[in-house]
Image 1 (tube, rainbow, N blue to C red):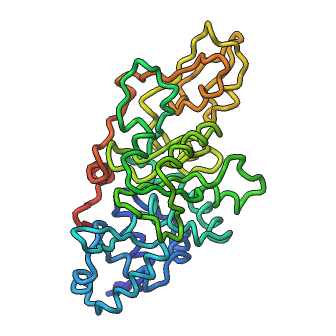
Image 2 (image 1 turned 60 degrees about the vertical axis):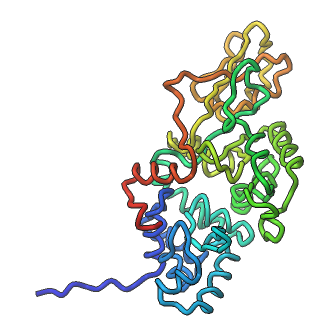
Image 3 (image 1 turned 120 degrees about the vertical axis):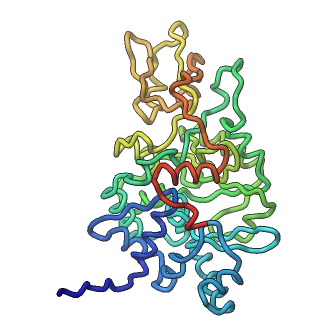
Length: 366
């Protein structure tokens, strides 16, 4: 009788399984590229600890008791892992709770201060081999497009969660950091991105949240609103969390760098992100067919027909094309009700919907 071969314990394999049990997901690659990514980010003991952590977080005392690790040793390790962007800390009833992060959005983005050409290429190899598998193949999607408010028809009622300005105003702390997608792409390709790099906006419901951050520069609410306008003028596309309440960031994206937008434009993943609730409308009487909007659109959603600009079903409803129209012939109008996907109320509801879609047991992690 042949004896079963006992698998050697691999902390990176265990961490990979934990990350894939999180609603966001973490795709595996047959050649082990996903493990190489984790090996770059985590030391073996860090990977082992992260693989055993809860998504919602635990106090050091509770985790110490559960994992049978001395409190002092555990606290020191968690401090290092937080500094490396491997885990998250949240405050609940005056106590710090430490928890595992999703790989995206989460661990990967927190490597912005550690990114080098080796890691940039490893990540590119990973996304090219997976082409958004798991991350973009499940619903609800992680991110959605946020439209440019000033080009929405003025008589329309705009939901507050459809306004980038309201996301900014609802926060108590504001930060700006380099876009990790742009940094990653600039390290592996010869032609640099033409758009600005420091455009990733972060928000917190806690005051002075970024005062001691090594990744995020604290800014004011007023500066955040200015950056929104500057990125719109530059032609970047606002995206944020696919929820109604509790937004933690606004990405200002381009299709040449953004891993989420590339999900649609490069890998043809229909659930890479959610289009806004609007689409572009062109007043043919005012349109002069100059083509400025066509050059502006990053999704090839506009074309000239009989000397007039027309839109097609590729429109994601961002509205950045309308900003450059010299005749104000373009505006955003609501999509048909059948084309609009209802957003989860908040991140908790998003996680449960996503977990149900992926058939993962979220209760084991919380």
